[in-house]
Image (cartoon, rainbow, N blue to C red; front, side, top):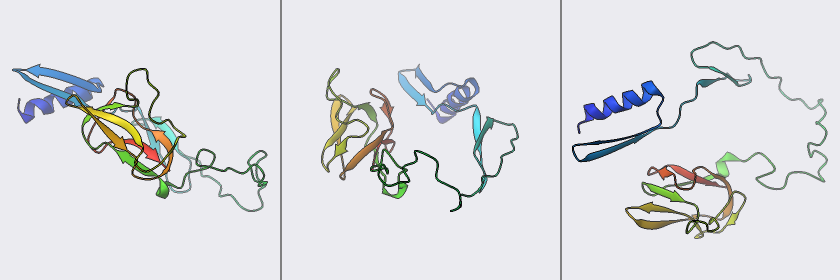
Length: 174
């Protein structure tokens, strides 16, 4: 199968809104997969709110007033100090401290050691460097993915049994 044929399959996927395609031709198997596209686009500009509008349509966005020190804090915001946020799950994350765990190979992501077993980690779990986070099956071999640092799992970006590409973000640790 040549590159032109594969390009034609990609065009067919785009035109029909497909996210996955498998084609067998002359003993060759080609699988194509892409992220689902949203019919909406985000419209932003500095100091303005984000608006999601149907793709191809214009949008007007209202400016956002900058907070000032004279504006009282909303009730229940934790501003008193006694119920202030204490961890990554309670407050905005410092994105410079979030570590993305990436897939070391192409394969199938498994969150647990076997079907029906408890997952290695869940969102909110504390992990230590060297702890097993998941396994990736490639060519019938189970490859453990371990934590490269201590922290808290704040996001699991793929679903159990999902195919992952090399370098794809599979988890985030804070």
